[in-house]
Length: 417
Ligand code: UD1
Image 1 (cartoon, rainbow, N blue to C red):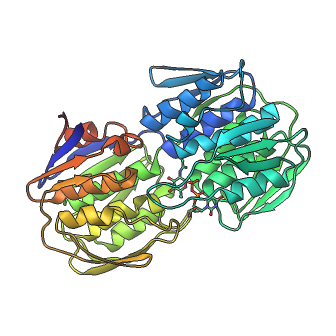
Image 2: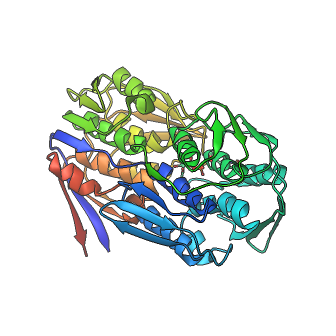
Image 3: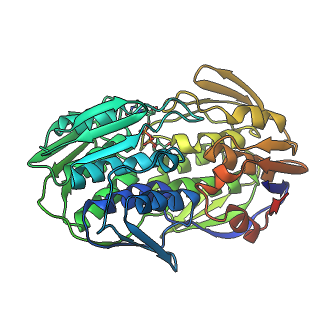
């Protein structure tokens, strides 16, 4: 079993370079299936989730090649619109191939993504959107089957600004006849990145990044070369690492606009942040003030940084409240943080955290990707040794996390047992 071992209490100093965004690269890789020409993605993050979606593409006949951080996708010879269950169930984001395959092949059969550790995660909004565009959808025996002899643009209102549903609808609509309007669309930077990629392929999309996206269907798309945006969640995690260890870190390759809510909350907590170009310097004296946080769709505070922020609040000098509004069950990390001396009470969708003066290292387990990051952060601040198991969750979304932290002075190691 592979574990991450952290000996806490070290101050960090230096520069951490942020990789390309996992949540951008996955829908973009899926979208490259839309046309038979090659697409190239520069400086992709070498993550388990990226390898996983490449396997999904290969399983249906596309070729993918990673060389020097550049991913070349050739979807010319797609032989099937039925990615195998064993691959799709490994990663929820595999479901993002549904829109592109339906648009290109006129049909798709894909297993239901199911729930996961953070909630039931339904797909009703994806299906509502595709059905409005003219797809005939059947759900049964654990699969979704969608067929469409012709896709026609439509006006689609999302009851919740779902990131994945917005992405699947966009990719289905790019070659539909006429105009599609997505109302109450997700506004995340990853949606804008996907729209930019699709436009570079010849699509006609305006309004991405606002709550109304308009897509005018085009006849053909062509191959493209694209550079994915930096990972705002990875950036936020290292910003919190500086705060929790009372350190001075420079975070490089970050779009400050994308982490505005994190900057606001860390500033409220007493952390000083300077912005210069694509860098943020994050400086903390080690005294953390309690702040209340409510997770919301972008531009609100990201749910993906809720667990890391909870680790930070656990050492604040007061009481803070964190409310999770995006996912129904995203407090799995609480039990593990408690092993390290964190004082938390859960009441429905809110967690009340009484700051403690010190955390203590313990044996803990990553229950999901961001929960794992929170445990590493707590370990950096804790007295003694923290041993984190089930780190495959962490490898899904953080490139070389222990190497990046070690480079700036953390005492952290990956071990094989
Ligand atoms: C994406 C991100 C994930 C992030 C999340 C919210 C990727 C690969 N993953 O996930 O890291 O935490 O956005 O920012 O980009 N919902 C429905 N019906 C649907 C779809 C969603 O009710 O058809 C609900 C979900 O259960 C959840 C909420 O909407 O409560 C948000 O989900 P969504 O925005 O779709 O998240 P994902 O795209 O799955």
